[in-house]
Length: 198
Image (cartoon, rainbow, N blue to C red; front, top):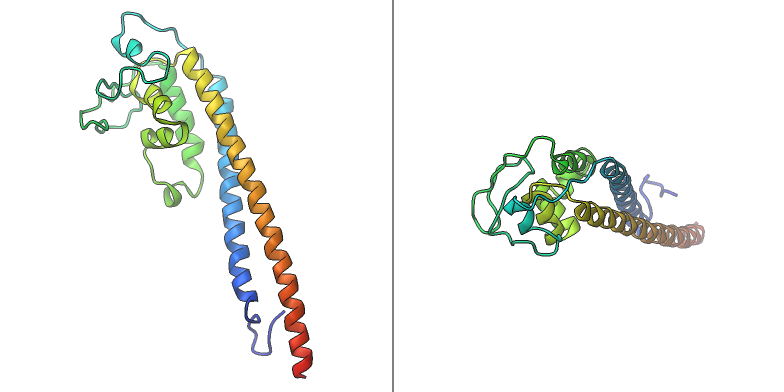
């Protein structure tokens, strides 16, 4: 409904803005859910690697929970930078490491959603730490092999990320229905006012 001058009645224009914001948010959350689903599929095809007892980096992060701490770093993410402690990160990823496959899959799915730069603008290392927690983030970016326990933890964390997006989509759909009801009520009031004015 529009007024004689072509504008929406007071209140309905604000609901148009709300509906558009909800539409954008729903599309973004849906894109993220699908990206995590694609990432999970790709992770499933990456073989886990055995722990090398002679590799201090493997031993330092064994068990995902805590590992050797960020003071001992070996980054396989391929991104130059420094650790949280300020120490330089060794960015030479071992050839054929499953962790490189994980990184590439994450960058090509989760970090490739259309709104990623606008909404997050994170590095791979920061993104996995924020999404999956500091311990798994450490395992994925500062160790040398993609162990079976890392893979299990990652799959569980990705499933949780997918579930979180699905719950958020339900909330968005509820908000959309609420806006639609409000618009219907306001439109009826606007029609009644217009009839009374005439």
